[in-house]
Each structure stands twice: as structure tokens, then as C-alpha cells.
Image (tube, rainbow, N blue to C red):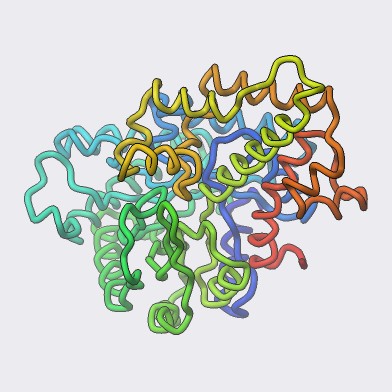
Length: 439
């Protein structure tokens, strides 16, 4: 399935039978990725893992990794868990000038070209080209989207850079060429900041306009062959989440949109599907929103599991000489180190912001787990509980959904095993919705 042609075949099958989708992991969290690999291994399914342009780029992004580093990181994790790297599809999300919006358009686009080339050279096969944002010297009303013609021209320019990189590295076999995702109506990464009354799905006419403008730009740039490898368009199907609210999929409100590609081989890619119900996800796949992107819901589950283990550690304080103080350390790190990862997103009183730092669905805490102090607290927490042992009664109290799988021997007993199992509770919904397993 690492072969991009096999991915394409699965999406085409969805168009024919309205079943079978694919979910895509948008996270660099090591434990989240390990849980995802184990899920795919058990399901005998492919695995798509994507990095965003601000997460991984030629300057390191916030992870400190370039595209080749990220590819090697995923390869190493897959090998360590006995999962064939050939079944992994690497993807790039929001690849374009997003990180460099504060620069003039030409400078931002030059950097974006370097970025997409580096992704293709590193073996990324699924490329979301996103040039929908204003740059410093772009004219126009910034309360409205950037003009379709400008977005399309820049998208084609980025695609040309990808194709040049593929040809340079002799990725000439049909199954090796990059596949492209286009589309400009992208939900805000990490969730919305406001509590809207309703999330309006993309209009069918908007989809038609996007495809027409994009195809024209690709043909003008001599990219007819690449256009044949555009597999999906990003739209807003009416799903979103914020700090403490979720907009669930309503297939009746998305009915017109879901039929907008009836005469096209393309499918829809849905971003911000985090926290949707299993039924919602299944209906989305049936309605051809069959590439499901998920990220914060998985790192949120990671946070939930660790905080539950911290409660268990507190109950076992009579066995533990030096506690991890995980929650206190997390709060300290978020306040003292790089607060811009959360302070632009959380509003209200100091108490409300404190609450959001811990429990917001947008999960801004995910940026802080690699910090030295917090990573040490996590390691200490897991070590303390491994030494003390976790009584079944405390699993029942703080992670009750894991008691039966634990008693049946379906999951391991270690603190790490419990964290993995909790994350996989989220992954189960995606696996089921995409047709990889039954629940």
C-alpha cells in the first residue's frame, strides 16, 4: 500500500461502492505514532502518516526535523514494531507558503518550492498543495479568500517543483509518482477559535470553480500528467471542533456537496474529523469524504491517558518515594516556555485559560510533550507505576473502558500498554469507518 497506485485504487473503489476509505495520521508524537502503527499491523491495513509545513520543513519546523528526518523517524518506528515500511504512505499536509505568510509572495513561494521538493525527495507520496493564504504583498480583501486564479497559479507552480524533484530522482514508475490533493476551503488547523452556530459545508459550485480553475492552471503549466494524479479535493463537510465544542457531521446538510464529484474520479479529503462519532465517520466515508484526517484527537487521548495515570500515581503515593508531578510540570512548562503555542488560542479569565491548557479539545499541550522537563516527568511517571504496579481496581476507577480488554489479555499490563490501548480506542473508530476492522 506504500505504492501510491494502490492508494489510488482504494479511493476509486470508494467512488464505485461507497465503502472503504483511508485515515491519515497527522502527528509527530512518538506514542501516537506507535499506537497507529500497531493498529495498522493488527488490521493488516496501510498507514498514512503526514507532516505539516510548520511541523517539518527545510528549517526544521517546530519538531526540528526536515522531511528526510521525518521519513527516517517513521521508518525506524515501523521497523521497531515489525511493520513493513512499504505499507506506510508518507504525506505532506498544507504544503505551501503558509509558514512564510509574513514575507513577500515571491520569497514565500521560493521557500515553499524548496519544501515540496524536499518532501518528494524524502519519499512522500501524498502531497496536499495549499497556496490559499495571503502573503505580505498580496492585494485584496483579507477577510475573503485569496483569488482563485492566484491560488491556482501558485498551486501549479508548487506541483511543477514536485514533478521536477520526482524526475530528478527517477521516480518514473507509475506507482511511484506523487499523488496530489488540492483545495482551498481548509478548516483552521487545530480547531476553530469561535463558537459558530453552524458550520456551512462547501458549496457544490465552489468545488466546481476550484476544479475548473486548478485544471486550467495545471494545463497552462504543462502539468497534464500531474493533473491525472490529483486524487482528492479538500472541502468543509460541516465538521469542526473548538476548545469545548464539536460540530458533528450531518449528511443531510452535506448532501449537495457529497454529490458534487459524481462525474469525477476524485474523492473528498476531510480535515478536522477529530472527535467525530463512529457513525459520523462511517457516513462520511460512505458519502465519499473518504480521506479522514485526524491528529489532535489522538494526542488528546495521549494526554488523557497520562493524566489518568497521574491520578493513579497519586493514589499509590504510599509506594512511591518521588512522584512525577506530571500535571504541575505540564502547567509550568506551558507558562514558562514558548507560551505562544497556546496564548493566542485560549481566552477568558486566568482560571479559564488554566482549564483550557489542560483540557481544551484543540490540545495545544501537544506542542510541549517533547520539552526536556515534561518528557522527564512522563518517563518518571511510567517508571514509578512500573515499579509500584497498577492494581486492577485503579484501572477500573480511572480507565474503566480498559478493564475488560485487560482481563481478557487483549492488552498489556504496563503503564505504556495502557496509554497505547487508550489511544487505540480512538483509532478503532477510524479503522472501522474505513472498513479495516469490525467493532
